[in-house]
Image: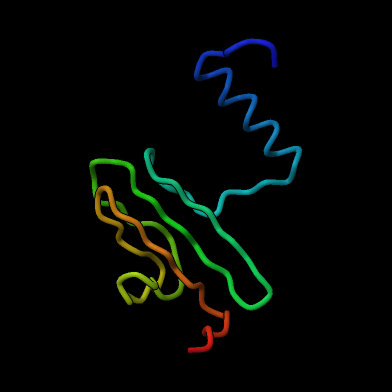
Length: 95
């Protein structure tokens, strides 16, 4: 890309690139919320960063390692806060 597109053109382009690359969303989330899933050989983690000024609920199944809250279908992430969810079905870390 040799130019700086407007927001709608960039959204369209990125949607196409993601679709062609087989990239799927980790979860449906509100604007201002960043969600990334990382998988390793022993565990999968969902990182949620709420950049918005509002508390949000994000679909998740597992345990938030920062608050020890259990996520059974969703996790509440306060405005400006972070959650790191060890997803169900992954063995606990030693120690």
